[in-house]
Image (cartoon, rainbow, N blue to C red; front, side, top):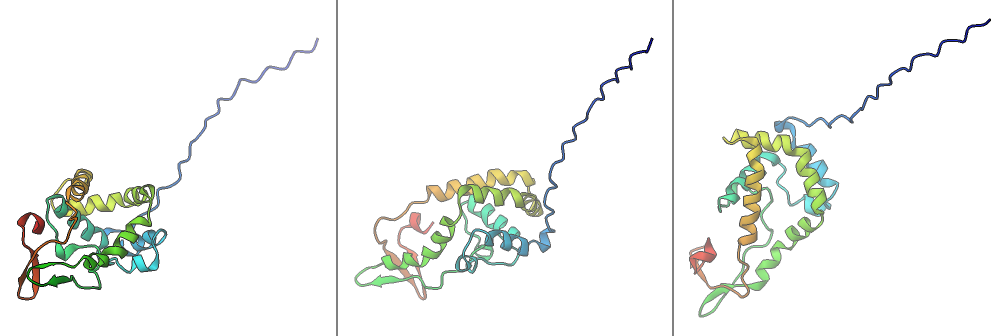
Length: 183
């Protein structure tokens, strides 16, 4: 009588999960083109023209670190200066010219071109380089997240003047007459 064929034992299938490779970042020294190209996916040419494109990651890290401490690191500002000069109205007292604030419109436009999700995506993409730059100035890289939150808080707490403010003229520059505004 014929023997039934043996039932083969089930073969255990292994499912190998293949994760897409993380995009390779350039070195911190060579990162400017990659950062500019990534920003170029979201910003207009006019807005890209506002960026200082030399040492972009380091410049931004130092600027944010200072901002978190309530300081402006003028040599490390990641944006070019406004084309128009600050304007004041001079009569019995010197006050800020309300039209002077219009020189910041291109910067506001630049920020509004990117969604929060796009900003977060760029931040995550370049986070290893950001942390490396933060370590170069003497901190733990991951602490930059806290510093960034502090800088954002500092900006949000900055008062916005509702009227023109009195100024003091110092030979060729102006300063606010009230120390709290000058700060």
